[in-house]
Amino acid sequence: MQLQPSRNLYVETYGCQMNVGDTEIVVSILQREGYVPTETLDNADVVLLNTCSIRDNAEQRIWGRLVELRRYRRRKRGMLVGVIGCMAERLKEELLQGEDAVDVVAGPDSYRDLPRLLAQGGGANTLLSSEETYAEILPVRKEGVGAYISIMRGCDNYCSYCVVPYTRGRERSRDPHTILREARELFDRGYREVTLLGQNVNSYKPDFPDLLRSVAEISPLLRVRFATSHPKDLSDKLIETIAEVPNICRSIHLPAQSGSTRMLERMNRKYTREHYLEIVDKIRKKLPDASISTDLIAGFSGETKEEHEETLSLMREVGFDSAYMFKYSERPGTLASRQMPDDIPDPVKTARLSEIIALQNELSAASNAKDVGKTFEILVEGVSKRSDAQLYGRTSQNKVVVFDRGGVRVGDYATVKVTGSSSATLKGVLRKNVQ
Image 1: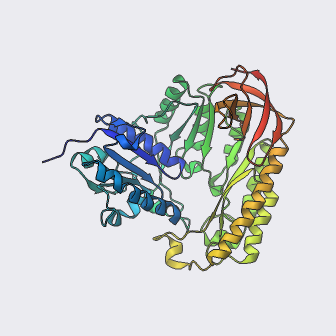
Image 2: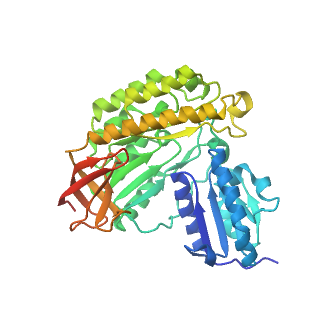
C-alpha cells in the first residue's frame, strides 16, 4: 500500500548556480502534485537537500546537516528526508544506510520521479540520462530582479580533477525555442536580468553566440549574463557578439584553474597558459571595459612551488577582477583519483591558497579603485544589509555598488557615480533614475 504524500515541502540548496536552478525545477514538479513550499523547517513534512560533490567539504556539510535533522525526524513522525543532486548520484548506497540514512535519493536526471518516490515513502533513482533537460518545466522562482535559465546539462570535458561528468552525465542542450520562451515570460513578469547557465555554455548546440543574441533581443531592458565559459571553446564570435549587443553584460567568467601549462595538461584542460592569455588579450581589445573573473585551484597533484608561482604570475598578468579560489580536493572516481596521487601536503595547499587569496584581494581592490570617479548604469537588486536607507545593484561588469536610495526602487535601472571602493564593493552617488 502506497503512503499518501506529505504536503509541506522544504528544500535546502547547496553548491553552484546550476543547483539553484535545479531546486526551482524540483519545486515546480512537486508543486504540481500538491506539495506546498515552506520556508520553515519546523513546518516541513518533506525535507530535500539539493547537494554538491565538487569538493569533499561540500559533502561533509551535508553529512553534518543530516545529523542535525535527526531531532526534527524524532519530533515529527512521518517526516521524509531526501538527498538529491550530485551527492545523491555519487553516494546512493551510503546515503541509504546507517544511522543518518535518508528516505529518498534522486540524481540530477531523476527529478520527475520524485512524486513517485515520495508517495511510496522512499526509494532511489540515480539513472543518468542522455536526453533529460527539463525543457518544458517552468521553474518556480521567488520574486526578484534576476533569474537563472539552464540552457544545457552535463559536461563532456572530463577535467581530471572534476566529478561533474560522473554526477551530471554527458552534455545535452535545450531547444533554443524553449529557452527564448522562458526568457520572454521572465521579462514579462518583471525580471530584468537572466543568467544563461551550463557547465560549459560555449559548447551549447547549435550555437551559443546566436542564442545569446536572441535572448538579448527580447528587450534592451533585459540584461543577459552567462556562466560558465571554458577557455578552449570561447570563440571570437562570442566576443564579437558581446561587443555588438549593449545589454549583454561586460562580464566574462573564464576559469583558468592554473597558470602552469604543465599543470593544465595534467588537469586535462585542453589549453595552454599562452592560449589562455591570447583569449584574454582578445577580450581586452574588443571589450576594454569588460571584467574577467576566474577559478583557481591550489595544490593539485604534483604541483611544484614554481608552478604555483606561475599561477600567481598569471593572476598579475591578467589582473582578474575577482576569483573563486580553492584547495584541491580529490574526488573519488575521477581520472586524478585513479592515476594521480594527492601528494601535496595539506599545510602546503593551505599556504598556497592563502597566497592566491591575498593576491586576489589586492587585484580586486586595484580593479575597484580604477572605477572611482566613473559613472555606471546599474540594475538595482535590493536593500543594503547594512542600512535600509541604502540600495545596492550591479554594474554590467558584475560589480556591486551601494548608494543612498533616493527615489529609486528595486528593479529600476539607475545611473550612479562611484565615489569610493574596497576589494569587494563600490560606493556611489545616485545621478539619475534611468527606468
